Length: 256
Length: 280
Image (tube, rainbow over all chains, first blue to last red; front, top):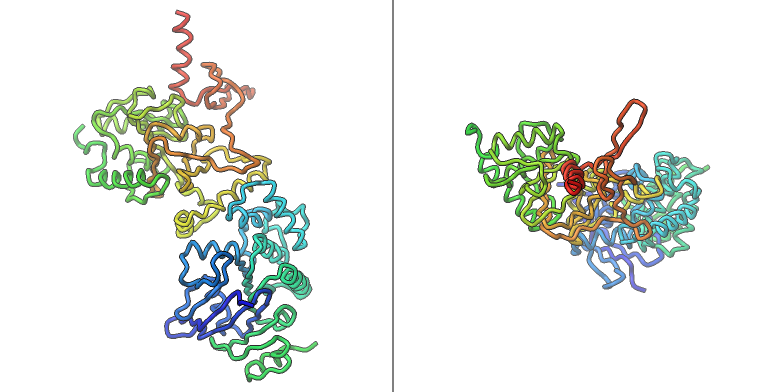
């Protein structure tokens, strides 16, 4: 099997400070990779480099495109990269406000990506929007409400619907459950797990919440000070941590 | 009046504006930045249009100004007087006699010809502005032809009002490339934009000029199941009886009685006098 995403030696520096350094990994279709680490460990920098929001200083990122096989994302033209980011990729922000258009109705938010790739039939766009709202457990009579009228959990689910409507193959998630209370988190995780399995998505999830990766991720990467200190299967890393920092991380979780 | 240079602006400024106009004509629908000058009138009163007119006028031109279709409103009269004074050009209210027509919010009902120039006053040249506040981002979207957002606006219209409720400044796509704000003309006028005359758009405060060469393809955006409609009030003109013109609704007394009249005063006057001529 060929990897969907092959990352080789990605480094990003902020002046003399390290954002992330020589990160390499392969992500296979249908696989969910978790990236954990404390604040400032370079997780978000890495994710933004991968998703094309930041340009890394070193390294290459190869993505398996539908049309022409493995392509180096950093060598692509901006229009190709932006096209990719609204068709094959999805990016779920930590704060739903960053990923939604707050002044546009829920239906318009979900429909935007469809219209961006050339859908021009109102009835069909709306039908798809309602279908996706129901898949993320938002009642269809809320389709014309603005996200400002939604609760935090609903906004996050709306953001997920908006991202998945074009059937992406790779989803980037930056702390998708951050700022939600635990019961809402659990439902969101349940939903995400279902969607990932059902659509056969590959995903990269950045989080500092070990419970999230335990539930969602197949593989885990632990980062500290910009470097990857440990990788492995999720259960293996969490149950038998090798690196001192991972051991600290795992033992810091309060057991209830 | 020789205290002013011809048409108020100095020659260097006019050259700069002409360069922007030529670039705009070369790339139809593309917003060309230009160094907009302070004009002796407030922003929003047509400073962009006035600068484009000043750069376009020659001493032989005949100048007409319309404001919402009318020749006799404050804005139209003062701009007309301004150029009468500073350029000494001939002015007219007759559409067919004019060589340069500056307009706010209307396209004349009389069909324009190849030897005419129509100058629009534009308040906000960026059609994507109310959806995307960042100028950096909107320019990128124009450059990369990412216009999905424009349809989000129309989608919102339909979901809220059951039809595309945008009735003026209706976005158009020019020559299959740039999405353009046609200035706040009623969408009734949109189909007229494929015309013989040159169309120039000036936005003074926003410092942008864009243009349409003659017979440029201009398509109003829409959905397959909600096609574009050039709508107008379902009446005919109370004064001249025309049924195919864009109408203004006018309240005539304190009891709320109202009539509909042509917004194009020149067209209405000629149209109204014709039946009488025939009768005589």
